[in-house]
Image: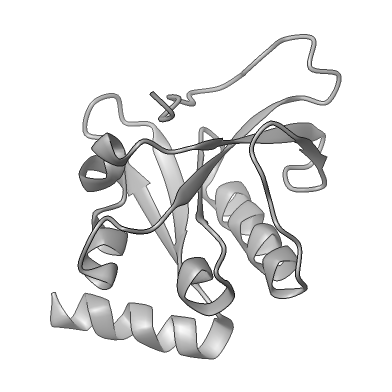
Length: 139
């Protein structure tokens, strides 16, 4: 446990955030989230599901770099450039999901008192609605 916290702390100090990759115990859905955006930039942490791990990791780093430059992601707005060929919309993650999906962040912050936005992606023309294995964690 202490090694995990130490690694998270070192990454946050070096890069501004740490990226965690996980799998849902319920359905095996892959997900990736940040730890450190709240601490360093007063911005909600970011979470994404349903892509290849490398693509999700890349998306979290794009979000982190944008936040470092002063961008603020908000719910209800469509964003391009996070996931190649897709548009993304953010939803606020309900705290009832924190222990299941964001345990490392809860452990790092020593509470669930930090906001998280889920990046929900869909085809760029939005014609197909939400695609992939993306459980919505806003309710």
